[in-house]
Length: 382
Image 1 (tube, rainbow, N blue to C red):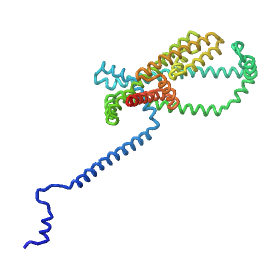
Image 2 (image 1 turned 180 degrees about the horizontal axis):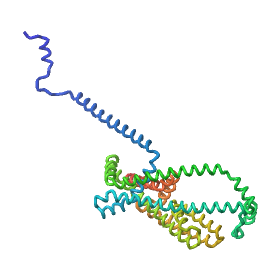
Image 3 (image 1 turned 90 degrees about the horizontal axis):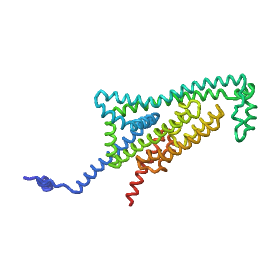
Image 4 (image 1 turned 180 degrees about the vertical axis):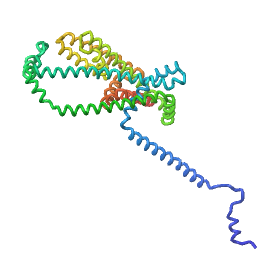
């Protein structure tokens, strides 16, 4: 006999070969799978962001060095690629990065070493001058008599505080020597820190040159996956901005320093080469070269009392600065990225205020990207 209970179960079972499923159940399974994938993507993104922030926090002290190394690599890459095409041997895969790294390091170390030597010699002269002043005082220089305004007040102060040896000793004794020693220690600590950061930037430059092709390929792949083709255009805009900043700031600054160095030599200023280097460094920041030029003119006036050469240096410097900052520099920086002069100037000055020297290159790059995004959005609206 057949069990009635088993018979009922057989009637409830679907026929053999009937693989039909409930559509609602299928949708639930699909939605669950889709939500699981979405949750995993969000979790991976959060985990990646966490480790990126953790890595940035870990190397935060060396971020300026890494950025400087990238700037050096971007600026020197066209010349490096040309040299690599000329000497394609595998033996040069290590030698060429080493040579380029050493050359770029010497570009910075050479002038600084000369400046340190000249500063040491001048320090000896200052110490001798102080010793002579303690023994015999400092007589009033001749150029005081030619001052157009305030001559009597300046001469009276000089005679009261510097003419007699006792007055000089009192003036020097009023200085806070302990504060000067503490400041010297702080300066030495900062110099050591800067040297370490510069060494790390040079090391970063070497590895970027050595593995540049791989770094470029990976960076382009990441930008395409993250932002699409616009991400690649943003990267190219940043690179063009860095090239323009190097040409407009560094090369123009060196040109201003060379011209002013020749002017210092013709005018008879002391240490024309040294002050030419100082002027070149100051000229990398717009409108700052006039400070160095004015200081050299004042030093020339104090040493020789020659009013006409000092005035000629100032006037020639103003002309050079005007041409460089208003014509040459905006064309070089903004020409490669089609950046208006106001955007260039805002990026340089704002970057220098926010990022110090590093901002001279970071600021124009940020403004170049912002200008490109602005153009894209404005055209999209049209």
